[in-house]
Amino acid sequence: MVDVQESEWKVIVFQLKNEEYALPVQYVRSIEKIQHITRVPRTAHYVKGVINLRGVVTPIIDLRERFGFPSSPYSEQTRIIIVALQDIEVGLIVDVANDVLDIPASSIEPPPEAIGAVEVDYIHGVAKVGKRLLILLNLEKALET
Image (cartoon, rainbow, N blue to C red; front, side):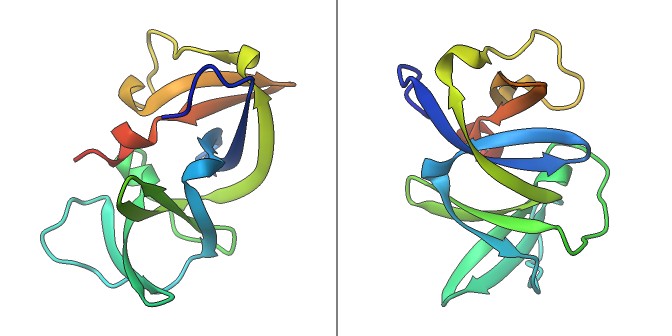
């Protein structure tokens, strides 16, 4: 994960349902519009299939379903965030990709004890940025099977 000693985190902010999440930019390769996804049989329900992205076959995970949220039809704002973790490259379907922010490390708190929306394992912490609360995603845990 990100070095907690850093004074600032640069993150990509995205939405699932009405909540804002953040992912360190060092993991993000690109942000793509939704495109045709080829279904792969016998995969977990949240694995939507694969896409051919510039000649690379990339698995696609619907983060809503991964976190146990009800699925939602894709819209013009739906995006696939292509992330790389070690030697794994995966696309994450999100409702909206909002912006890139610098978050001071001092504004990041550990995850609360009880979180009903997302399993606490998937959360690295919560950042207060102005009036916004951003849930910092623990990418390693979110991609575990």
